[in-house]
Length: 221
Image (cartoon, rainbow, N blue to C red):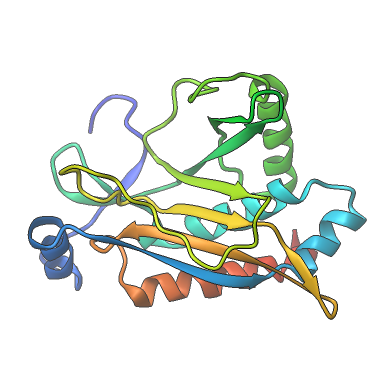
């Protein structure tokens, strides 16, 4: 392992049930896909309001917790060219600048404990939140996933397209929109974009089910 390379668990290709699927979608049909699902955030919105917290980092925590609970959302290529699973994946999220209507990327360390996660978010925003440019914080770790919010729009579909010959990213790209309330129920659209080599429809379905479970468990945070 390279010096200072983040911790990961190598997959044994000879016993991995998805070894043919991974190879097929990395070598023959190099494709990814995107799914958008409406999530119930009634409990999360109430939790943020009663605890006087910002909604964005609360959803960010639920999403980050979900990613780190699933091997398929932490897949990577090892230095030796094999396939592995990161021990932890850190969120890389976008911040919007009201003054010039641009955004910047910033990353933070994932913390399993909500209070520690929320404080980490506040510390990162205090230090990097007003920095402009694509990358507000340098030295982004290689074990990361992307997440962004479109707070102005309650959308119904989402698709990320990258031109060229590059393979679709193994790490998940997440997005979510603004939440709306109907008859006391708050919902928002959430999207997952990922390489088919990393996850099939079954695993993506598990992701959204697990995300909903985390959104419903704020009393345990």
